[in-house]
Length: 145
Image (cartoon, rainbow, N blue to C red):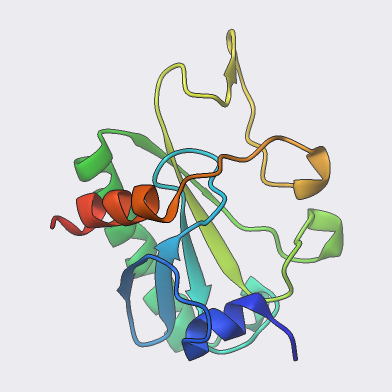
């Protein structure tokens, strides 16, 4: 199986890890929508939220809350939490994951008075391209280092 998230979980790809729990790995998105865009990825390969077992679902809820609080504290932001489960929900990677996206007034997802939440890669919304050093710096900030 050639799953990018399985390669991350196994250590073959090394992202900027923010934290981990029993069932999930938390790391910065290498092509973020906004600064600090974080991914929570299941360690077990499942495709959608509905496939998580009870322990994983409970762990996920606590982890989303804790990571959101950390991002809010460290980056002075509000939070969008998003998950796409299935092809027609625009899921682009067939491995369960959640996006936690820091939001600020006037950020690049605002167009006047309208907010654009753009996770669907088919929308061609241009993603940011931070360097490895920039990702490391943001990860250190979020971790409190």
